[in-house]
Image 1 (cartoon, rainbow, N blue to C red):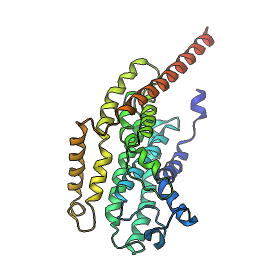
Image 2: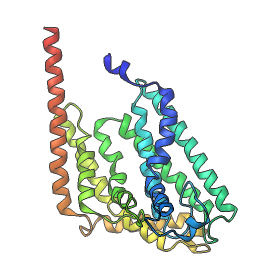
Image 3: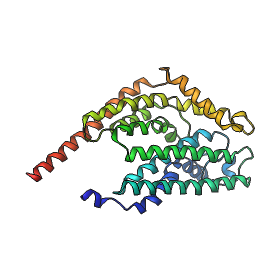
Image 4: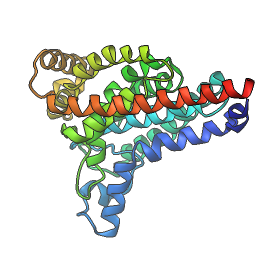
Length: 297
């Protein structure tokens, strides 16, 4: 009862989710712009033309857009857990995220269409990529925040394997691009596994499907980079977006069955960290049940 009263109103989730999608998801882009304005990093030609809310430039932006929009969607979807009513929270999170997409994406597309960025930019294609990745992340965030514990690890699979690229985008002069940093992957995967356990040890079985999905998605980073290298104005992939999806799917499928590039050592660290977090959650749940039993005695 006390927990329900301590939660916020669903009305607050609308602005929070909108801000989270853009300000948190695209924090590396905003950070790079601030580095360039302050002189910490060298300014690019696109930055000299003017600030865009989203990085709608063709050079190296596709993978970054996917990563940032997806992680932003995940974070905004999780905000649906804040209110006491799950349905109202989900509706507010969806509305807030869509509003942020429309505002940031629409303004970036409009500015790019006015040729305030280099002519090789593809604003419409970038807008489609942003919306698709953001909606996928939003669905994963809603599942992670409101879904059963066993499915949370599965929902976090793709953000986990792309999180290192997001972090490296915060480094001055860096870019958001999947690089497969083992320790970031290990920490993120361990936390994701630990969150799949709420109150029963049997929920540890949820690690099995989550681990399988993460194993497959570890090929997503190289697949995104392969697609990005083959996209430019007038290229076959830019003219036919479905071929880009097919190319990425083929790269993921071929790499998923190979142990190379799957950071096997990091899996050991991730499993140990996940077991520690799960043990803490289970012990806390057992302690709460013990206090409740004493109160009723």
